[in-house]
Length: 635
Ligand code: PRX
Image 1 (cartoon, rainbow, N blue to C red):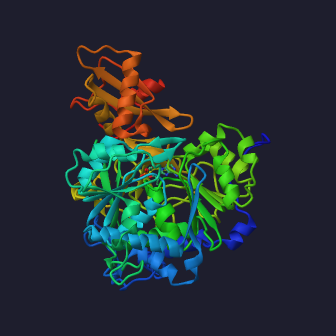
Image 2: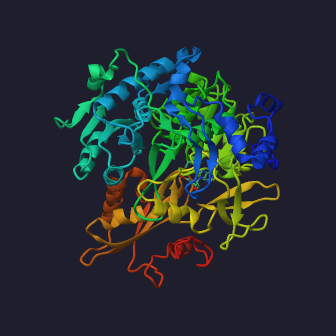
Image 3: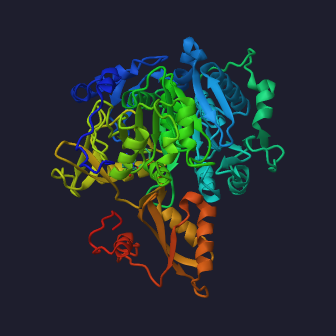
């Protein structure tokens, strides 16, 4: 604490927060959900438009392939846009966007719907149909959500690849999804520099056979090669008659979807080198995402909400694009780096747009904290009412800084634990509950979480164990695209009937959960999820490398930093220059986020008898711990 006194165990919400909360009592909601899970979620689902009501809320007959709202027909975009443009909300701002260069664009619900309809017509005219996959690889521009919504509107499955990924990562995702159409930008702006998105797409496409058309949104205006017959400018297509409906005008009919029809796939890193495509659906995802946003971030009709994630990650999918639109809210989106051109960029935008609720990641908070309090203190942050964090455990020091310097000790902090797979917040406070810095508190109503040992037995209070989920939830992943066996094996096999999260945690005497971190070969670096195997295969694709191992070690800002151990092929000598070359190589293959912090040249790697690298041992040695103290599931 700033005054040097002991921090209180609990941070209690103010009476105003409690009086005005959308969800008044955690206990009551949790009780309702535990007594009647289907009834609880059905009540939330009734708040949406369904072309046809569901027959069964939760179908467990083919578990772990759970189904929600079976027999129901809807389309998430109908609930995000069509529904609102028929009301006074057509004139409300859906999206406010600021470019890194200061450019501002705003979209009312009417305007956003118009753009989505036009682009959906363009996609349909290119032959994109229900069930087709479309890869989206763009910078943070409004056309990224527009492209996602246009796909969903016509029943196509979008696969957004984060714009910070590079050639290999994009190539693998294009191939696996078998997309016929890809959407990109000429370039993106980040930190005052241009990210060469189109060039990376061109390189990735050299080996991706299925893509027939590439649509390019012009953001930077710098010269990029366009391949005749394959590449089209977004603005050219949007000006053609194909962007108008057959009946004329900017309308486009929204496809009627089964609740269980796929909405999107999103690749995420797992324990093998091959990223897995997590599949989400229209119905359950819609209900889960909207309910969690409404209760946890307490959005009000007049609020301005800012989720500072990238739309290319699940946080952006659920809480920049779908969640806020489902609630008819106003969402703010920023293109660039938090410190460009100065470390007050974020705080100046909070003031300029009167942001009420801000949701970001611990790594961003720690990064901004480093520049000192003077930067935020130059700005009027009094519009803020609630704050949030996600992506990795938040250290109490960063929590308290965020609470004191940004929230002025008025704004409760919602530390939300969830995953690409869960689609929605799972362990999270509501604004009415008492908080403890560093704890995500308790499961969202209807979520049943536990902490178990190797045999699946609940561990004692205060003891560390594996975090599992015991009941299905509506926004859960349905499968891994084209790999149902891997879905069963990764999530449902370690403990039959329980969903295995890959995280370890402990629970305190108040029933509060404290997430410790990953127990598999997944790293969280600056909140980004990366597989050690992906980094290792990028390293061994360099001609000088025979074998490689990657681990995460604690880092003050990034949470974890990537440290690698490399055995060189005969004829290559370790050197500073080669270490640098390998870092650049990994950055080129996977993207700047995967660039290793350190390359250690070693003569050999510790291995199990079956030849698997023991990253646990490398980690223990690097941290100076006894080798038995660091656990992973690799052996
Ligand atoms: O390890 C947990 C960590 O992030 C993982 C999920 O990563 P990803 O699928 O990329 O989704 C991130 C955004 C939802 C989890 O398995 N994680 C996420 N939120 C928290 C967290 N760790 C601690 N506290 C959190 N609030």
